[in-house]
Image (cartoon, rainbow, N blue to C red; front, side, top):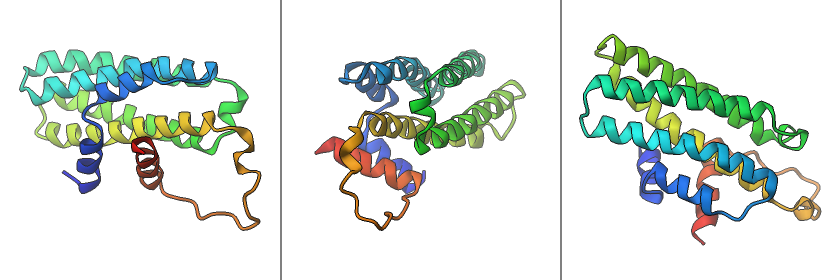
Amino acid sequence: MPASLSSLQQTLLSFGTISRFLREGVAHEDSRQLRDSLGPLSLQIDEVIRLRRNGTDAHAITRRVVDLARCARQHQLFLTELGAAWHALYEFDAYQRVLRELRDAIAAWQQALEHHSPREQACFRLFELLAWRTLGEALLLIDIYEQPADTHSDVPYALPQRLSGWQRVRAWFRRLRQ
């Protein structure tokens, strides 16, 4: 398991923890809608990973992966209905991109399960990694959206260096723990 995934798993115990955070967080009305759409996706991810790790039969896992694929598609459709303020954020495009990658990984894993492919384990690992990345990007997007508009008014003239997706997620988790 990559070190970055391991450190994220130590920070958050499960995708269910993210789901609880999404339900319990105080949010703007606009971000509440995104949280409400993201919660079921997080729960589906948590369930399918739990089933896979517990050695449940492939047929049951495949059914859950099909449900997960449907849930991810519904969430992506929901994103298209969000207002212009969301679409204007750089992080929104990054989130949509990683969500498409997750959907591709889900489809590849589903196919590997259905064909009893020896690549199933590799497909699962990629899916799990992208699931963490996707939910981290979503949490970052919500955090950025909820920041007051005037927080950047005293920014010096030099633009800050752009952090990678993982660096932004780690910084967000550090702020969350403080």
